[in-house]
Image (tube, rainbow, N blue to C red; front, side, top):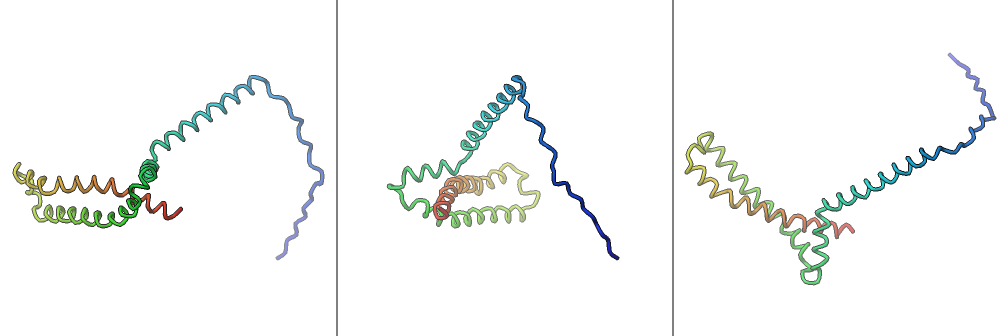
Length: 145
């Protein structure tokens, strides 16, 4: 089965309408909108820069590059060790909770004993990880550059 299509194209395109000047009110309004958008962009850029924590760590490394040149690489090497230790403490905590079941925290003594054994270690390891990880990330960014 065959079909035939005839396409007729017009070589002449319709003329573009003549450009008309916008009233001054519209021009002023467009100018104001553009200015507000520029201000919003400036504010968003400032907010993004304020929330860029890796920039803060990069600045720290750059300030102390001469005194501690090995700091980012040392943090990069230490990070997996710290993460493994943190995971080990969490695994031990989870295993103990699994063995104790629902009765594990029925007395004030058992709850306090549990917190004494795990709370301080997890809190301190978590804080250390939160300090070392960004410095290790700076090391990775320096390698990528």
